[in-house]
Image 1 (cartoon, rainbow, N blue to C red):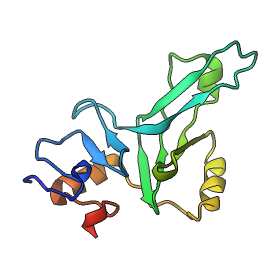
Image 2: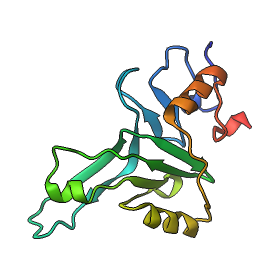
Image 3: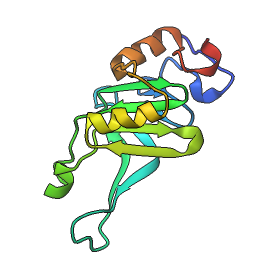
Image 4: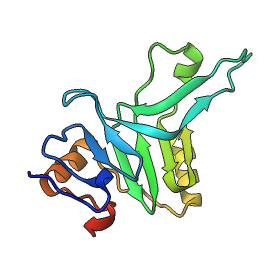
Length: 155
């Protein structure tokens, strides 16, 4: 596919662009190379700070690693990954976030341990069931058309 230009270059597609999917500026799904797992950058990043006997220890979530599914609706990005950092402490591994919500225009990022917590939160935002898609599905469509339904000038 040739280069597809959008009004905002963040959303444009280049034939050599094999490692990114633009979501809502500045957030994108990406991978280090075409054979590595997909991930999504969290903006802003999340920190776990409520460790038992916390002694100034913080655990950062700057990316959702091993992204399996995501959805974009009404300016809200939702993501799911079963990934767990095997090098983190046992407490972190047992309390790892798997569901995520980002609202870029409000600079909100939230992580959830359970699907139930996640669904309760998105319902407060007026979102019912997310229209999940895999990064591979979205990337295939982006490569083919240069458009995805949330890209501003693709409607």
